[in-house]
Image 1 (spheres, protein in one colour):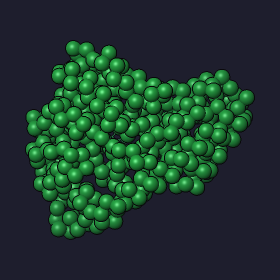
Image 2 (cartoon, helix red, strand yellow; image 1 turned 120 degrees about the vertical axis):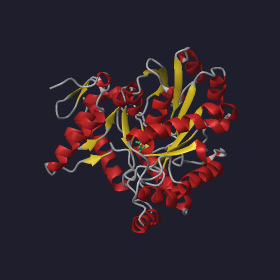
Image 3 (cartoon, protein in one colour; image 1 turned 180 degrees about the vertical axis):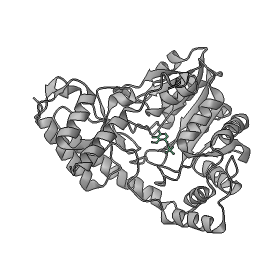
Image 4 (cartoon, helix red, strand yellow; image 1 turned 30 degrees about the horizontal axis):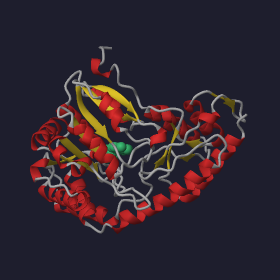
Length: 400
Ligand code: PLP
């Protein structure tokens, strides 16, 4: 067989895949697996979005779509940025992409040259580093310790920036920790970035609406308008409107970078399907009550999961501000043996043994760059969460 491309040599397959494959195999054997591994809302897409897609298909919006997104959807995104983020983007400063993932990849491809350094706070969403490598860049990881709520410290950010730094990636509320960034904390990060005008900022705001207990979301271009001409504000409908399968993401940013992102996308995938765009438009312009109602349900689930995990011997679970993940520390479980005789040396061992012995699928912290932790998604119904946490408690009680 001829050789594969050089650019793939450092790109790893997500360790999450191995876990999901094993969970599926156990399910196929008829086992009652509960998955806390997927980062996907368990709610349905709002019916008015589905209906809008249906109508768009019937109207014949089935031809090649505009590469940057149709004017109606871009206008709705413009209104959303103004209404919710106090950000003013012209229509040519907005683009629509095939999911939040493509927004991020387009943004990296448009800005990062071979060898450029991209700062990624740790723990990170598993795709960030791999995307940077695919774009030819060099991921530079900056630790965000648990004792700082898994948030990036300004002094660590400052110390990590070099003349080769091209971009900083931000993600609050965060996958995998759920950490939110207050306005004050964001101001401190922005103050550092003002000192380094050669660095782009790519902020991934996918979990913007999933914040709890009155926590206020903020985004860096709004907090520090002097940074706006080097910020790409990325967002999408996947998490807010339970529309993961529709594949709509969008970005606001300087005209030149948005144009570059659109040109690239035009060569690779073309624009987002007109049917999907109609659904996203309806979601953005339709009733928004559902968003807050669902966030309130996620908040209750977070409280349940944090409380039950903290009752499991050896687990310490931090209570995060948002998203639908918790990131419990399992350090005290290491070096022990499970009731089934498995030795736990790493968080990967823990996650695998938990799946095999208690049929609960989670993801080990190593997949997100910080061990020994688990990432637990609570985008699952309350009864399943209660049962899964009871099994985790039993698993921990069985460790010796
Ligand atoms: N950014 C973060 C932090 C995510 O967790 C995800 C999905 O899990 C995405 C981006 C990708 O979003 P989309 O499904 O719209 O591509």
